[in-house]
Image (cartoon, rainbow, N blue to C red; front, top):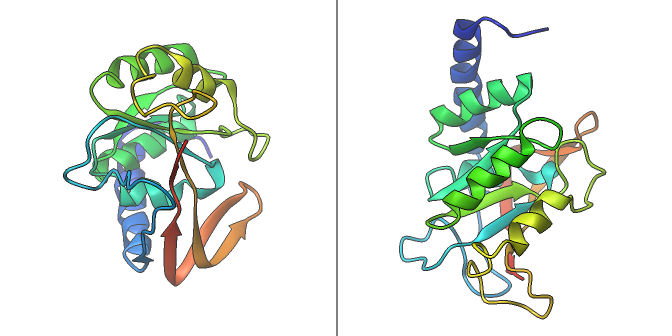
Amino acid sequence: MRLRHPLLVKTLGLAGAWAFSSLMRTLRYRYRPLGPDVDPARRNLEGRYIYAIWHENILLPVYQYSRANVWVIISQHKDGTLLSEMGRHIRLKLVRGSTTRGGVQGLRKLLRIAQNASVAITADGPRGPRRRVQPGLVYLALEPVCRSCLPHSVTSVPGVCAAGTASPYRSLSASGRASPIPPSVYRPTPTAA
């Protein structure tokens, strides 16, 4: 099904945001950092961070941190248009771009934003391969503007690896995403790199 009519995209975006928010409200959220507390929802969080999220676990962090000062890159493809409309309704700050369409422009915009705010990117991208870091994240982390985002680790690549699990959950085989089954408990485990 092709979504071309702007009114249809806006209507489906609103309905999708409502359904997504309803599902996410059934979850309990337990945050226990493995290192420094870099929770973007913290009011007194100092500094800027790059949050790297596996594509399969994107649903829960997106909802939990949608109102934090974190900018997210979303695909310029047709499905990205619907997702960005949903994101607008849950107050997600968005930049459009992906590996095959508008990626360079999206990364440049993220670099400008990273001077004043934190950014989030899926480490493995929408096309995969699953759980393999794509060059966009490495490029973003190695740019001089982002080097001050976090104290450097041994590898001198700044960032926060944000993973998490929902229990119980169902794996959506077509996309590889993990979908929580209500009522679930979500346990994010961000670690500073």
